[in-house]
Image (tube, rainbow, N blue to C red):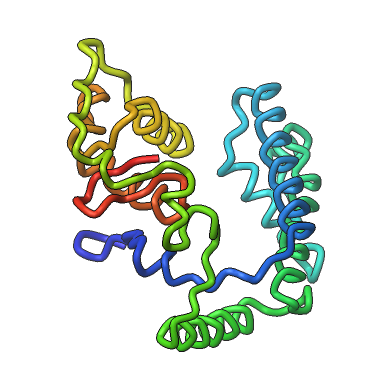
Length: 236
Protein backbone atom coordinates (compact mmCIF):
# COMPACT_ATOMS: atom_id res chain seq x y z
CA UNK A 1 0.00 0.00 0.00
CA UNK A 2 3.02 2.30 0.26
CA UNK A 3 4.61 4.23 3.11
CA UNK A 4 2.00 5.40 5.58
CA UNK A 5 -0.69 3.19 4.09
CA UNK A 6 0.56 -0.28 5.02
CA UNK A 7 -2.08 -2.76 6.10
CA UNK A 8 -1.94 -3.38 9.87
CA UNK A 9 -3.57 -6.23 11.78
CA UNK A 10 -5.36 -4.84 14.81
CA UNK A 11 -6.32 -7.65 17.18
CA UNK A 12 -8.93 -5.66 19.09
CA UNK A 13 -10.73 -4.64 15.88
CA UNK A 14 -10.09 -7.59 13.57
CA UNK A 15 -10.45 -10.54 15.95
CA UNK A 16 -11.90 -9.57 19.33
CA UNK A 17 -15.08 -8.19 17.74
CA UNK A 18 -15.49 -10.91 15.10
CA UNK A 19 -18.95 -12.54 15.37
CA UNK A 20 -18.13 -16.24 15.49
CA UNK A 21 -21.02 -18.72 15.08
CA UNK A 22 -22.77 -20.53 17.92
CA UNK A 23 -21.20 -23.75 16.83
CA UNK A 24 -22.15 -27.28 17.80
CA UNK A 25 -19.54 -29.82 18.89
CA UNK A 26 -20.15 -31.95 15.79
CA UNK A 27 -19.61 -28.90 13.57
CA UNK A 28 -16.42 -28.00 15.46
CA UNK A 29 -15.12 -31.50 14.92
CA UNK A 30 -15.94 -31.42 11.22
CA UNK A 31 -14.19 -28.10 10.62
CA UNK A 32 -11.16 -29.15 12.67
CA UNK A 33 -10.79 -32.43 10.78
CA UNK A 34 -11.00 -30.68 7.40
CA UNK A 35 -8.47 -28.04 8.47
CA UNK A 36 -6.09 -30.74 9.67
CA UNK A 37 -6.46 -32.58 6.37
CA UNK A 38 -5.67 -29.36 4.48
CA UNK A 39 -2.62 -28.62 6.61
CA UNK A 40 -1.31 -32.19 6.31
CA UNK A 41 -1.85 -32.22 2.54
CA UNK A 42 0.03 -28.97 1.95
CA UNK A 43 2.93 -30.03 4.17
CA UNK A 44 3.11 -33.42 2.49
CA UNK A 45 3.19 -31.98 -1.03
CA UNK A 46 5.75 -29.31 -0.13
CA UNK A 47 7.96 -31.92 1.52
CA UNK A 48 7.81 -34.02 -1.64
CA UNK A 49 8.38 -30.96 -3.87
CA UNK A 50 10.81 -28.54 -2.14
CA UNK A 51 10.42 -25.85 -4.83
CA UNK A 52 6.64 -25.69 -4.36
CA UNK A 53 5.58 -22.49 -2.60
CA UNK A 54 2.17 -21.74 -1.09
CA UNK A 55 1.95 -18.58 -3.17
CA UNK A 56 2.38 -20.51 -6.42
CA UNK A 57 0.03 -23.24 -5.22
CA UNK A 58 -2.76 -20.84 -4.29
CA UNK A 59 -2.40 -18.88 -7.51
CA UNK A 60 -3.26 -22.12 -9.30
CA UNK A 61 -6.01 -22.93 -6.80
CA UNK A 62 -7.60 -19.57 -7.54
CA UNK A 63 -7.47 -20.23 -11.31
CA UNK A 64 -9.16 -23.59 -10.73
CA UNK A 65 -11.79 -21.92 -8.54
CA UNK A 66 -12.60 -19.38 -11.23
CA UNK A 67 -12.79 -22.03 -13.95
CA UNK A 68 -15.36 -23.94 -11.85
CA UNK A 69 -17.89 -21.15 -12.15
CA UNK A 70 -17.06 -19.43 -15.41
CA UNK A 71 -14.52 -19.14 -18.17
CA UNK A 72 -11.48 -18.88 -15.94
CA UNK A 73 -7.90 -18.15 -16.90
CA UNK A 74 -6.30 -21.23 -18.50
CA UNK A 75 -3.38 -22.93 -16.78
CA UNK A 76 0.06 -22.30 -18.20
CA UNK A 77 2.69 -25.02 -18.48
CA UNK A 78 4.15 -23.82 -15.18
CA UNK A 79 0.68 -23.89 -13.61
CA UNK A 80 0.21 -27.46 -14.80
CA UNK A 81 3.44 -28.49 -13.09
CA UNK A 82 2.41 -26.74 -9.86
CA UNK A 83 -1.01 -28.35 -10.11
CA UNK A 84 0.57 -31.79 -10.30
CA UNK A 85 3.09 -31.10 -7.53
CA UNK A 86 0.59 -29.62 -5.08
CA UNK A 87 -2.52 -31.48 -6.21
CA UNK A 88 -4.20 -28.08 -6.30
CA UNK A 89 -7.62 -29.57 -7.01
CA UNK A 90 -7.44 -31.36 -3.65
CA UNK A 91 -6.57 -28.07 -1.93
CA UNK A 92 -9.53 -26.40 -3.64
CA UNK A 93 -11.88 -29.22 -2.66
CA UNK A 94 -10.83 -29.06 0.99
CA UNK A 95 -11.30 -25.29 1.08
CA UNK A 96 -14.74 -25.64 -0.47
CA UNK A 97 -15.66 -28.24 2.14
CA UNK A 98 -14.40 -25.97 4.92
CA UNK A 99 -16.39 -23.04 3.49
CA UNK A 100 -19.53 -25.20 3.41
CA UNK A 101 -18.97 -26.44 6.97
CA UNK A 102 -18.49 -22.88 8.25
CA UNK A 103 -21.62 -21.74 6.39
CA UNK A 104 -23.53 -24.59 8.06
CA UNK A 105 -22.29 -23.45 11.47
CA UNK A 106 -23.83 -20.03 10.80
CA UNK A 107 -26.97 -21.57 9.31
CA UNK A 108 -26.30 -19.83 5.99
CA UNK A 109 -26.53 -21.11 2.38
CA UNK A 110 -23.31 -22.39 0.85
CA UNK A 111 -23.37 -20.16 -2.22
CA UNK A 112 -23.55 -16.66 -0.73
CA UNK A 113 -21.43 -14.04 -2.54
CA UNK A 114 -18.66 -12.36 -0.55
CA UNK A 115 -20.62 -9.10 -0.34
CA UNK A 116 -23.58 -10.87 1.26
CA UNK A 117 -21.33 -12.71 3.72
CA UNK A 118 -19.78 -9.40 4.77
CA UNK A 119 -23.22 -7.81 5.16
CA UNK A 120 -24.39 -10.67 7.36
CA UNK A 121 -21.24 -10.57 9.49
CA UNK A 122 -21.62 -6.84 10.08
CA UNK A 123 -25.27 -7.34 11.05
CA UNK A 124 -24.33 -10.18 13.38
CA UNK A 125 -21.59 -8.03 14.89
CA UNK A 126 -24.18 -5.37 15.73
CA UNK A 127 -26.46 -7.98 17.28
CA UNK A 128 -23.63 -9.33 19.44
CA UNK A 129 -22.67 -5.82 20.53
CA UNK A 130 -26.26 -5.23 21.68
CA UNK A 131 -26.22 -8.55 23.55
CA UNK A 132 -22.98 -7.68 25.32
CA UNK A 133 -24.37 -4.29 26.30
CA UNK A 134 -27.22 -6.22 27.94
CA UNK A 135 -24.75 -8.50 29.75
CA UNK A 136 -24.78 -11.56 27.49
CA UNK A 137 -21.32 -12.58 26.23
CA UNK A 138 -20.80 -15.53 23.89
CA UNK A 139 -17.35 -16.76 24.88
CA UNK A 140 -15.37 -18.76 22.32
CA UNK A 141 -13.97 -21.00 25.06
CA UNK A 142 -16.17 -20.55 28.15
CA UNK A 143 -14.11 -22.92 30.29
CA UNK A 144 -11.18 -20.51 29.94
CA UNK A 145 -12.72 -17.13 29.28
CA UNK A 146 -15.86 -16.94 31.42
CA UNK A 147 -15.44 -15.01 34.70
CA UNK A 148 -14.46 -17.30 37.57
CA UNK A 149 -13.37 -20.17 35.35
CA UNK A 150 -9.69 -19.26 35.68
CA UNK A 151 -9.87 -20.07 39.37
CA UNK A 152 -11.21 -23.53 38.54
CA UNK A 153 -8.19 -24.38 36.43
CA UNK A 154 -5.65 -22.94 38.85
CA UNK A 155 -4.95 -19.63 37.15
CA UNK A 156 -5.00 -17.37 40.20
CA UNK A 157 -3.80 -13.81 40.27
CA UNK A 158 -1.44 -14.57 43.15
CA UNK A 159 0.91 -16.15 40.64
CA UNK A 160 1.58 -12.76 39.10
CA UNK A 161 3.60 -11.76 42.14
CA UNK A 162 6.06 -14.61 41.67
CA UNK A 163 9.43 -13.62 40.27
CA UNK A 164 9.74 -14.41 36.59
CA UNK A 165 12.63 -16.65 35.52
CA UNK A 166 15.65 -15.23 33.78
CA UNK A 167 16.01 -16.23 30.13
CA UNK A 168 18.63 -18.90 29.44
CA UNK A 169 22.13 -17.72 28.54
CA UNK A 170 21.77 -19.45 25.17
CA UNK A 171 18.75 -17.79 23.61
CA UNK A 172 16.42 -19.44 21.14
CA UNK A 173 16.44 -18.47 17.49
CA UNK A 174 13.32 -16.55 16.45
CA UNK A 175 11.35 -18.86 14.10
CA UNK A 176 10.82 -17.69 10.53
CA UNK A 177 7.23 -18.92 10.09
CA UNK A 178 4.31 -17.24 11.87
CA UNK A 179 2.81 -20.52 13.12
CA UNK A 180 6.15 -21.52 14.63
CA UNK A 181 6.53 -18.09 16.24
CA UNK A 182 3.10 -18.46 17.86
CA UNK A 183 3.99 -21.91 19.18
CA UNK A 184 7.38 -20.75 20.48
CA UNK A 185 5.86 -17.80 22.34
CA UNK A 186 3.15 -19.97 23.90
CA UNK A 187 5.68 -22.64 24.88
CA UNK A 188 7.88 -20.01 26.52
CA UNK A 189 5.05 -18.74 28.70
CA UNK A 190 3.86 -22.26 29.48
CA UNK A 191 7.30 -23.51 30.48
CA UNK A 192 8.11 -20.49 32.63
CA UNK A 193 5.62 -21.52 35.29
CA UNK A 194 4.91 -17.88 36.16
CA UNK A 195 3.42 -14.93 34.25
CA UNK A 196 5.79 -13.09 31.93
CA UNK A 197 5.78 -9.58 30.52
CA UNK A 198 6.21 -8.96 26.81
CA UNK A 199 9.80 -7.86 27.43
CA UNK A 200 10.55 -11.01 29.42
CA UNK A 201 9.14 -13.26 26.69
CA UNK A 202 11.20 -11.43 24.05
CA UNK A 203 14.32 -11.91 26.18
CA UNK A 204 14.14 -15.66 25.57
CA UNK A 205 14.80 -15.13 21.86
CA UNK A 206 17.91 -13.86 20.12
CA UNK A 207 17.67 -10.41 18.55
CA UNK A 208 13.90 -10.25 19.02
CA UNK A 209 12.39 -6.93 20.18
CA UNK A 210 9.21 -6.86 22.29
CA UNK A 211 7.40 -5.27 19.35
CA UNK A 212 7.57 -8.56 17.45
CA UNK A 213 6.27 -10.53 20.41
CA UNK A 214 3.39 -8.30 21.51
CA UNK A 215 0.97 -9.00 18.59
CA UNK A 216 1.47 -12.74 19.07
CA UNK A 217 0.76 -12.53 22.78
CA UNK A 218 -2.39 -10.50 22.07
CA UNK A 219 -3.60 -13.05 19.52
CA UNK A 220 -2.89 -16.01 21.83
CA UNK A 221 -4.80 -14.24 24.60
CA UNK A 222 -7.74 -13.56 22.27
CA UNK A 223 -7.78 -17.25 21.36
CA UNK A 224 -7.73 -18.13 25.08
CA UNK A 225 -4.45 -19.99 24.55
CA UNK A 226 -2.84 -17.57 27.00
CA UNK A 227 -4.32 -15.35 29.69
CA UNK A 228 -3.48 -11.69 30.20
CA UNK A 229 -3.31 -10.83 33.89
CA UNK A 230 -4.45 -7.62 35.55
CA UNK A 231 -0.92 -6.20 35.53
CA UNK A 232 -0.42 -6.86 31.81
CA UNK A 233 1.69 -10.00 32.00
CA UNK A 234 0.80 -13.29 30.29
CA UNK A 235 0.16 -16.72 31.82
CA UNK A 236 -1.35 -20.06 30.87
